Length: 329
Image (tube, rainbow, N blue to C red):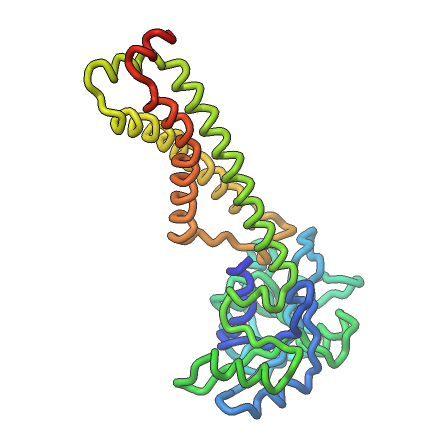
């Protein structure tokens, strides 16, 4: 979700986007068109662009987004045309290259959206923004009518003057327009999107439950292993193994089990994430973000589960004396 939010706030390679605060998701933000002109007067702002986001269904793809833009503003101007031509009439559409590949459409075809509306596709564009390239572009007025919200936009995209920090200018915008949020990095998505907050909170709860369940699973496995190998542990103690070596043996096995589970889980997770992102209902909306930090967190989580799960079996193993272990067997 963070990656998708980052794609949206930097649409048209803007420095940040201005949204209505505390809405259920980004696409439900509603701002008056006139705000773009007022934001443009704030110190440090070079240009602004109005953007209306409209979610519709195209060829069974239920999360297809149409971007309403003005041709004279910088977000539209920065679109790189790679096939066809630019629209010459208000009813003509441009289609992103990723969206074109997924839908199997191109110049000369028609884009059929909600309410039976059809728009001739005259060109294919590339912006370098996955979210933007997965959708289509139509004139702002048409998208406002499709959404039945004339005069209202989703966000004001802001381009800054050279040398200025987005954080500084964003603070000026928020101060000038109470009830709005100027988002300049993906981590700020929860300031706008209440569904993102729910997803983050749910993620932490699931992680905690996974830690508890995983710890119980490893504890049970290693406890059974200790019970089944009491004689072996007794012999190792009898031939001179110190308690720390016994402890390392148990913990090492627990770590091995956890790392094996981690490898299987990561493999299945990567495949599931790719399949989910390529599904027609989520394409362009959800993009997997496999960073080093994600894998590092997974490794730390697995090691934590191993250590926690091995604690009790290790304690039982090191307390056994050779005589006691052999007698129990």
